[in-house]
Length: 88
Image 1 (cartoon, rainbow, N blue to C red):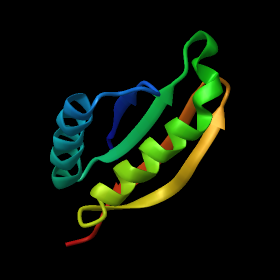
Image 2: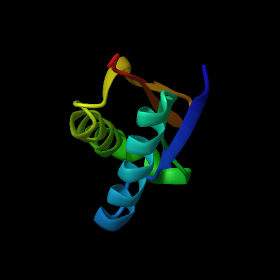
Image 3: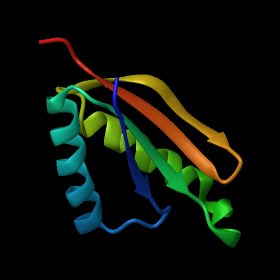
């Protein structure tokens, strides 16, 4: 199975979020897994809660197309989450 990655920053803007959401929808429709992650640079690690809220919102927006395989989990400077396409 193909895994596509989508990268966010903890302070991702609304337009950028919607742009990446459209890409994720396309990937899930193609049948690929999506690995969404928030990358924390420097002191932005202080905004762990912002990153988690962003990923959970991302999962909620893609609820019709995919299901969460792994909830957001912090690994070093990355908070990752996996989404798999729903069976049609």
